Structure formats: structure tokens, C-alpha cells
Image (tube, rainbow, N blue to C red; front, side):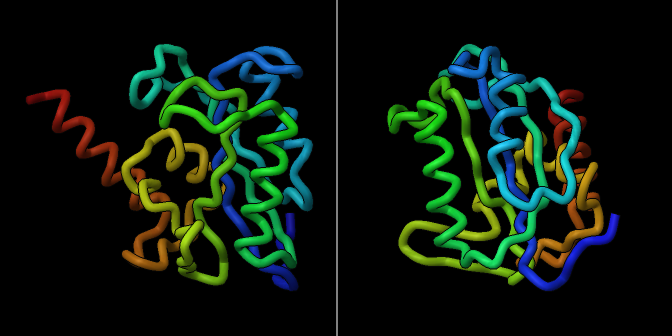
Length: 165
């Protein structure tokens, strides 16, 4: 697959742990991927434990897409898709039909009142890093300079250390 450098690339993390109009969470994630424009690569879907108070397991994935949209425009597009899927604002980390987050942008870092790229917590989340390793292992975090593969390996080492202690 050749990746166009004409437009910026975005790495988008996707998650669901609640049935919606498309069915079970796996179907919701697949439908969200189909709703995204100009998708260049899609990770495998993985099942993960919830973060926070939710009791339901998540289905997670990541995609790479290219778009001429600015980061705020891309965020607005993702929020529209979430609303179309029935997502409502509510308790942080609660069950959700779909969650779409901009993790990385080929333009580097972006920060304004509503958006922070790279995603502020992506370096600490295996459910984001593991799918990203499948589709963008050499993409470098603009803040640390580490590749996605390096970030995932470091987090895996930390997790193994916690399990042993």
C-alpha cells in the first residue's frame, strides 16, 4: 500500500463497549471504520478490559487515514460520527457505543482549548498502542521522539514489572 503524502495523516483510536444500532461492540467498531473517510490502514480488533468504572469489556482498533481537514475539523467530524452512532456526553470512562480519538497527526503537535495532539494519555494505554503498532510501528511521537513500537514495548515492560511485584 502506498500512503499519499498530499494530505496529512491521522491515527485514530476507536473503542466500543455497548451495543448500538449496528449491534454488538465489534459491529459498532466496524461500522465506525466504514464511516471514516480515506482510510489507509486498519488494525485488527482487540478485546480489552475497561478503564475506570465501566464493567463492560471494550473492542478497540486503530486506523490511519488521510485528510485535508485541520485537526479541529477532524475532531468535529469524529464528534458528528459519535453522535450519529448515539453517543451522548456522560460520565467519564462510562460505557459507550463508540469512542473516536485523534491520537496522532502527521503535522506534529497541536493544542488548543478543545484538542490536544498527540492524545494526552496514549503513551499509557495498551488498548491504543497495540493496535497502532500493527499499522504505524515507525510513527514517532512528536514529544518523546520514540516510535509507536518503542512506546508499546516500554509500556509492556512496565506492565510486566507491575505484575511481578
